[in-house]
Image (cartoon, rainbow, N blue to C red; front, top):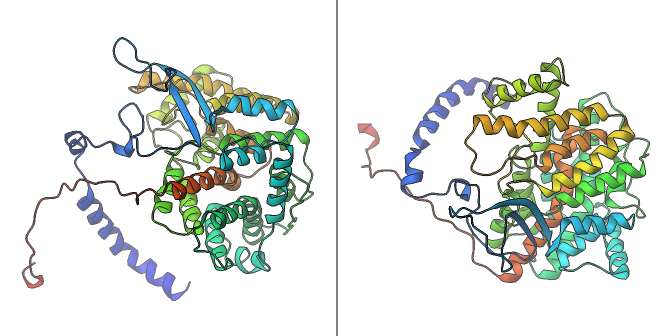
Length: 465
């Protein structure tokens, strides 16, 4: 134990007492939020976000709309819930997915082009774009040795954020926020994220587990999804079905409106005029959180706990009892949340979950994991019923994309430590599009208002306290 570690150990009792003081001094009376009409989480009671900006990149729809985009209302004045829709640059995600799957093509790169440049690429444009990404799939000389391999992080998201910040030092134009330079930086990071994530995981397992260190260089002929699987596996072998399912996950995770936590962080930091690397590191920090990108890990762990706690996984009654205990904070992590259920925006359904479910079933058959898929299907069916019995529901509750993405990653033999980095590998496309949008539209620095509820106090000199 170092001198610093020894100091921390001896100081922790005092810090615990101070933390109690800090907690008491910052606790705000819940009634104040209603009194001052504060939208906690920048959302109203039914989960709709406070309008804070405009975007042309994607649209998340959860209620019935009129042709002009306004919401339809029932006789009681409430908006009418509808099956969820996600549109990339105005195109329904179902149509996007059906388009590239019908041609047996990988779709992530095509979607990246669409989100960044506002239109679907033709064959030549897509080929040129793929060539640019392939050319950027390299890291600075000795970066793996000097950055990734030194002090590998216990959490891959921290390793990814650290590497992104380090890349600032290798960029001669790091602070140039002109559009061509920012686009170059974004394309470079989109291409490099898979490598940084996989190499960070390999370094972690090499140092902290009895594992050999096997690192594959990316293949310029392969898609992003294929490269991830090839680099992850020691033998570099994967099936076509595996690659296409992972590609689909990347497509569904690439973007989700300007109001999600990490994308909002992208807008906030970009509005300050800071550099691309700082923006992406902050967005990664947001995505790491279990309420955001880390939710699929929670789903996987909850399902593992269910399998250990419930003797008969085919019994609706037993599963219902477990889910009820989770809500009552008696089971799993005692937080009272059934992970993978419900969404901040969607009401009746999450379109990403519906698309992914179909591919999950196909992959489960190939992997011989039909029983696992059946268990997830049971939980998907029963959880909304249990939640409705125990909670006041202001809008619909259904499985979200995180519910199935964790299962997909498990079937693809991607370890839990890589779940959120895989999400980030896709979502950096959306972050990049929103960063460019914020820069082009030259908005003001984002600075919302916070109402201070403390009372005026007199300063007391030290010798009189």
